Image (cartoon, rainbow, N blue to C red):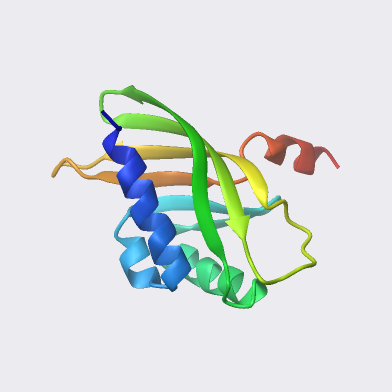
Length: 132
């Protein structure tokens, strides 16, 4: 049986593809963070939404994320998701890798829904970026 978080992440990827950022924000905690790039973090839903709008514009409104292999480690109301994240876009030149090893942290809320608290599509590659 597939872990329910795989479906949640799939719904998030669909919202990103459709640029439905209002719906996307329903899957984040109020105090969530998004690693936009090394050294730049969006904090809270409003900053995260604005970051996704900017990311969409950077990729000429053609970004299509999807997940490959995924490992989910769950403890009570917290889950660490390690995922191969594949990005496709019409933009040929980009300074960002399009095949990533993402790390996400999800928390289960009082209603039982999984919400993203930390969204780091760069995964441990972030360490290399910060070391430069």
